[in-house]
Amino acid sequence: MKPLYTYDEVRQLLPQSYPFLFIDVVEALVPGERIICRKNITGNEWMIPGHFPDKTIYPGVLLIESMAQSAILLGKLSPSIHIDDTASFLLTAVKSRFVNPVVPGDQLRIECVSIKWFSAQGMVEATIRVRDETVAKAELIFSMARNT
Image 1 (cartoon, rainbow, N blue to C red):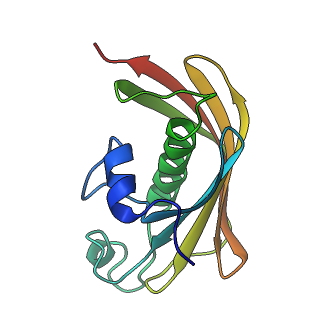
Image 2: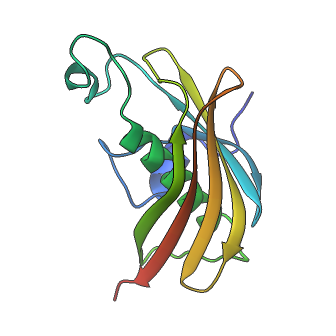
């Protein structure tokens, strides 16, 4: 399936950069409502050798970051939400839950559904699936500050 937004386009949209970019492509988008992104996990990820040396597990905090980056993309690609390039973000993850471990070879499908957006705040419900099985869920609350 051809992505709606390629890796290079995602790189241009997100404020994060390598090695802290955790979205490969955008697969689906309903502006203002939901987005589905993809991230491929490989054994070459920079954090894999240390997490954990005897049993490789992709860090949960980076799953939350993948959800947050998906939410940022939803906001930036939704004219009704309007996140501009000068925004900084403060994130709170509430009701986060890690259901199954993520390991190299997994392909993450990150879905963010808009709950509520205000001019400087937003809330989304995010779910990450691997092979149609939920591996993590969270509600994310954002506060956005305009950099001047």
